[in-house]
Amino acid sequence: MMKVKLLIVFVALVFPLLGCSGADSKPETKGSVEARTRWWREAKFGMFIHWGVYAVPADSTKGIAEWYMYNHQVQVKDYEKFA
Image (cartoon, rainbow, N blue to C red; front, top):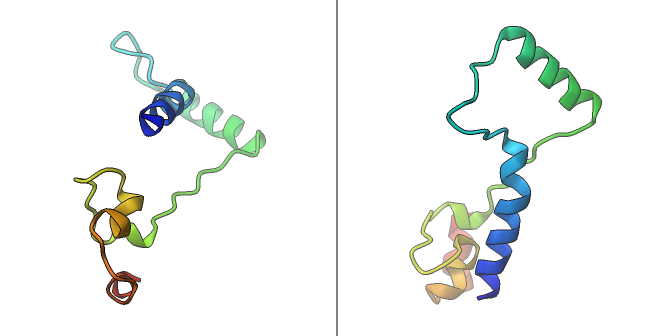
């Protein structure tokens, strides 16, 4: 239940930041993209995408992928091979 609550909070906080305004949104112009990009850089925002070792098997059928080793009862010596 805690995972679901965390997911809901995450989506509620992140979704508005993605610029998802729905079907009524207008296509961006080159100028609007440049302005938005300039603002992003001046605001010192960045994006870091972390792909952990759990991304190699890419299996989240038994829950969150970060828990792959635990959920699939994988031994450390076998899990190390993903790295």
